[in-house]
Image 1: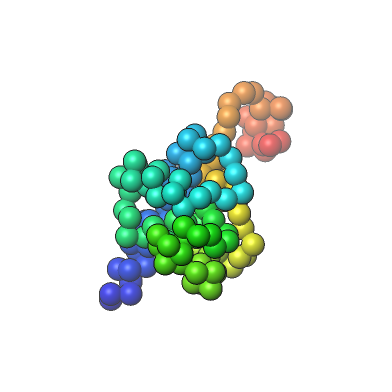
Image 2: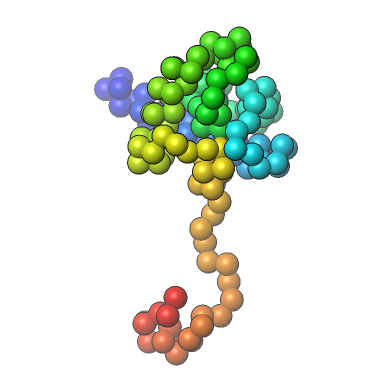
Length: 130
């Protein structure tokens, strides 16, 4: 039961880190393959997101160890790789070679952008040409 609650909370943290933190990082610092620990930490604090799962946010938006990952969060490369594996299993079907740009791509909405259908009559008959 405890493991089920932990997985639920972790999934909610992943969703908030993808859909809230990602666009905020892009807006503040531009698109990048990885962000610094201080950029991630300051943005999480500014957005008032749950800091309990901050190492997972670092694993999402950073793929290599730095001085700050060790000094501030006590994350060496082996533990960072372990966290990245957990994130990859949850978001990327086990593909550990994702970058911050891949995580940012998850936050983009995939909705209809409007405009007419290329063939409105086919669309009328239920045989969409899209």
